[in-house]
Image (cartoon, rainbow, N blue to C red; front, top):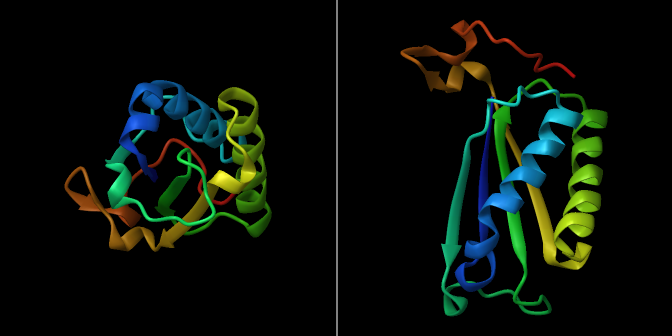
Length: 128
């Protein structure tokens, strides 16, 4: 399981929501082998005055990935590298304007479809 939160300026990222979602989900399916149909994205877009980030442009974006524990450090590095490369290629987003945070928690800390996460029968690997 992975849920993605995007924080950025509304005037910049609202028109690009679909493109950004497609790029990020493509990275997750490639690097972490998430299924194509497991896309859980939230856009928490802010007015310009509500996002204070000196030394960054108006395109500054934070991508927060909340997920089950279990992925290797190399899998996390690969996802981060892929995200920087693909957002640069597809969206022209400079590396200085992108920050990525991976936040993990044990599966038992999640409640999904009426059960604790560690009781779910997943169709994809978490230990990549």
